[in-house]
Length: 334
Image 1 (cartoon, rainbow, N blue to C red):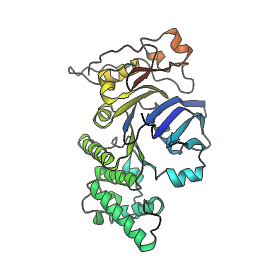
Image 2: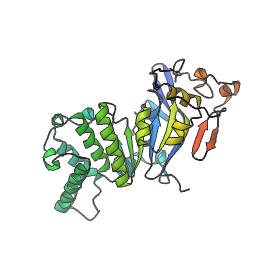
Image 3: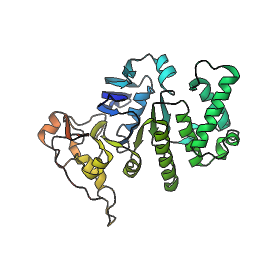
Image 4: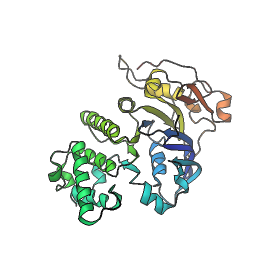
């Protein structure tokens, strides 16, 4: 099996707050292959966005500390890379971001064309020998091509419009286009359909899947919506309170869950009788998290050893791993 494009290895992140240190990530590991779409799922506050920001190198300065681990991208540890080189060569070029709220991502005072061409001035995939008019022509042709690919009507005219002249779905299409413009190898999509209604969500997911396949780009898709992960992703990694719990291809994840937290997530989806089964207890306090497995305080299967140490990674089946001492399969009604 070829080496993954991105390998997150035992990454831990702490935040300094007025109430003390918050241990947001605790030894998180995952890998992303070339052209693969990986869903990062879990409840709000589980650390999905923090992990995305760690990969991009945009954690808030002065209050955040990466206390352990490595983020290896194409053979290089991004956590050791000089900030200037990371900003110039990787962030926004080889790794790009689709943010959660397109309304907040655009400056309302400037046309979308001005903002997109500003991106191209610093992150253009133009060949090194191009300059002047040839470079501008290349950039504009690339922008028009990608806007057409994301189904923006009359792209040349659309560039002249202000953000408020677009619908939410169109703005998100523009954000997807901007993520693809630099010809990245990896895109991090941070819950990009949250602000959209259900019918537009389906269109955006289909578009993102088609664009990723067409461009051969890998995607990390963070979401709390399991249905969205099922529709879009090749593989799913589930997180809880800053720890990854289970990692499997999408079919195995939904058909044969192995971690008690995964059971709880899938069981919370309304069944045929519309019954919703909640997970008992409260999310772990990350300022003073439980030792060992952080889910143990809510887990019906918890044992003494769950508090003594975090469970090791166990491979239950090919490509299906779980961090649990009890990996027995359980069918979950959905």
